[in-house]
Length: 413
Image 1 (cartoon, rainbow, N blue to C red):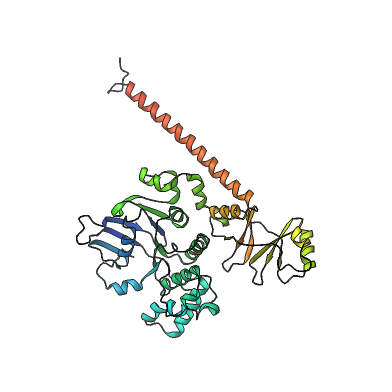
Image 2: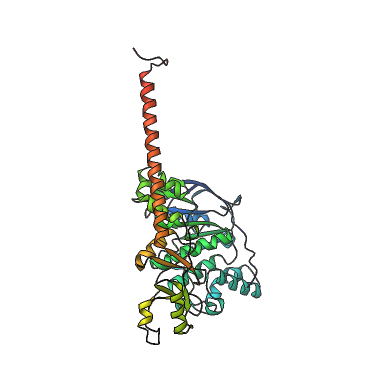
């Protein structure tokens, strides 16, 4: 694989950015100013039609601003050639937007080819990026988009957006068209990629839980992209600016904070495992030595395949082909505790397998660990509420004391 020489992110400054369409009395985006740090992931979230996608598309001038300025790493890009700008800004959209007549490799290599890269350099870059997004280059290089699942198409779409190593990546609801389980895994993959690449990511979503999970900061936008609050996920959850922002936070803020903690932050335990190639007697012996009632079978590539209980083995009659329960849900180390809790509850067995970047087994997170984390969050919220109540009481006492004193500081008669 080619050596990863990826560049980091770039600062983005939006200054009084406005978009007016002919015939509309009010602007679609009105006077938006914002500073985004290099390597930061910023999420635009807001109601449908509030202008978040329009604001995003003005950054790479897919939509031309009516007025205002856009600076990337201090360079004013408002007046430069938009084609040159777009080669410096990656762009990923819902349903991937891949060209159906091109192979995976041709889709990913399109922008580098336009930029004049050599064939050898493009080939190395395609291989590097497929590996980076968790797709085997040998297996996927020559496939066409119709031969891919929705999740695989989105991974290729992200790889294509990163192909020319841009410092900025714009993402417009990129995971909105896939099923919830695939969406969770794609979110985890993006978090892992960002840890490696440190790009500046601006991401549009209507899903506040997705915003909490992915964002370093979240911009909650009202109509015409007016900023209601621009802050960290934790600050917005614990101290929403007004009722509009509170409406996005919704009920259960403490549980939503499970989206701020990753599986890698809690204890991942070992679990007895066997492989599909192990003889039946060896599997019996392994289970007996483990002291547990269950064992995890891995496939030929080390990925979770089946949960096997003692009773399954007793009924196996020489073959495990129909024995056990297939593993449906797994989580990665980048998954949130909320993802893990949902997987555990869906499986109804008190644990979920944790996997690496290629789906290989790395351990297990159990219900006890997750519930301890929930209790810690609830207790922290209870203590915060008590402290807030004490502050209100002290403020009232101070106000009462001030009112009892005269304007000159003396007590009233």
